[in-house]
Every structure is written in C-alpha cells, then in structure tokens.
Amino acid sequence: AATGRPLLTCRAVAKSFGGIRALQGVDLQVEEGEILALVGPNGSGKSTLINMISGHFPLSSGSIELQGASIDGLAPHEVARRGIARTYQIPRLFNHLTVLENVRLCAFFGGASDAQGESPDELARRWLAFTGLEAKADVLPPALNLHERKFVELARALAARPRLLLLDEVLCGLTPTEVDHAIAMIRKIRAGGTTIVFVEHLMRAVVALADRIAVLDQGTLLALGLPRETMQDPRVVGAYLGT
Ligand code: ADP
Ligand code: MG
Image (cartoon, rainbow, N blue to C red; front, side):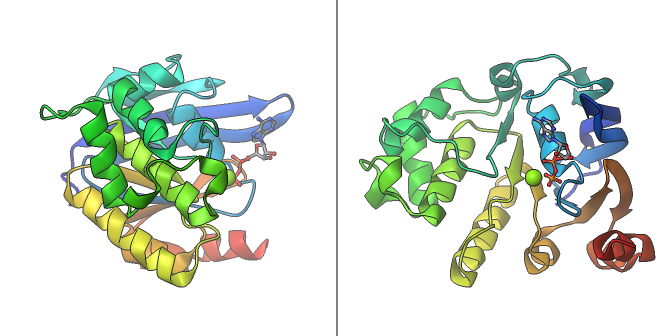
C-alpha cells in the first residue's frame, strides 16, 4: 500500500510538439507503493506524460524527480537504470529475438532494486512464468497473439527490476478473462513492492486497482484523488462528455 513517501515528483511539466501543447503545468506526486491510474480522453496527454517520465521525450519545461534526484534529460536506458520500467501502448518487441531473449535483454540492462543473486536468465524465466508464458520462451514475437505480446512486454519491464512501473494501456484489446488475469498480476506486482502508474480506459480495472486516479484533459491535470469520488467530479464527467 501507499507509504506517503514521494517516489516520483512532476513539477509544472509541459510538452509542446511544434504548435501543439500536449501537456502544460502538470504537478503530480506518486507515492512509494501506490497504484496511480492515469485517465482522460484520447489525446489528453497520457502517453506523452509516460514518455516524459521514461526519458523518451525531453521536457519542454518543468522537472521530474525520482526520490528527490532529477531525471530530466536522461536517456531512456539511463532512466531504466534508475529503476523506471515501462510498457508501450503498442508492444515493441524485437521480432528476430525469442520471447526469452527479449525478456533477458531487459534483465541485463535494468534496474535499481536487488537482483538477489539471480542471473538475467533466471530473472527472465521467473517473470515469464509469472505472466504464464513459460511455454512461449523459444517462440518469436510475430507468432504471438496480442495478449501474449502484451504480457511479454510486462515480463520484460519486470525483469528490469523497476521501483516504478509505467503501463500504457496494457489491458486494451484483452478479453474479459485476460483482463482479470492481468488485474491479478498487477496486484501481485504491487504486493512485491513495485509502485505502478497505469494509463487505462477500462473503468472496471481502474476501480479494481487504483489507490488514486489522475485525470488529464487537453494536457492539464483536471483532477487527482480517490477513484470513485474523482470519477464523479462534474469537471471529469464533463471532460469525458466533451462539455
Ligand atoms: P493520449 O495518450 O492521452 O491519448 P497523447 O499523449 O498520445 O494522448 O497525445 C497528446 C497530444 O500530443 C495529441 O494532440 C497528440 O496528437 C500529440 N502528440 C503526441 N505525441 C506526438 C508526437 N510525437 N508528435 C506530435 N504530436 C504528438
Ligand atoms: Mg496514449
């Protein structure tokens, strides 16, 4: 559960793409141990915020700190070393490497928390078992279905031993049964001490998982709070209805 200690602090984060203001003035603190859902209409800036935290896009202005240390300007692999791992809205696997090799690669390059003496191979196999993909270890990604590709991405992020895990629409396109499986996995990941920020449209998953939710609308943080209260906030309802 959330500890009240800040793990990640975003201050006045802003991002423009040419003339498009994708984010502006986003102040957000993620507590160690919490699960924070990032929600909002399409194009509201959710993926952009994930991309800024993970070092994939530089900030236009503002700052982002992990446990009090600035991570601004770090490359994605340097952010990963500090203990932030992520999945992508559209899975990005190396198609010429097997599932096991894909996961093992991230075990080599990851993370901040203890490996507890496990080799990259052991780490990779453990997380493949966790996601139910042991039988797919030697398969190439193009032979996988969407849910398998998404779970390989999750295994890959976990093998990097993150303190903070960022999930961008990891449930999108899954069947209800696969969603249930994923919700149970995400709960276990948090129980293991990993803090999680997840972007999600599926409200039943948001309500099932999130300690707090942050609502983005047109690049600004519209609301932040407990899930049910926040989703009933008239401004949030308005943003979703486009009023
Ligand atoms: P969300 O994930 O909430 O659907 P995004 O963060 O992907 O929204 O996009 C927010 C805004 O930023 C949109 O207007 C989108 O078109 C724009 N945007 C996102 N990424 C880029 C990019 N690489 N280049 C130009 N515009 C972008
Ligand atoms: Mg997105």
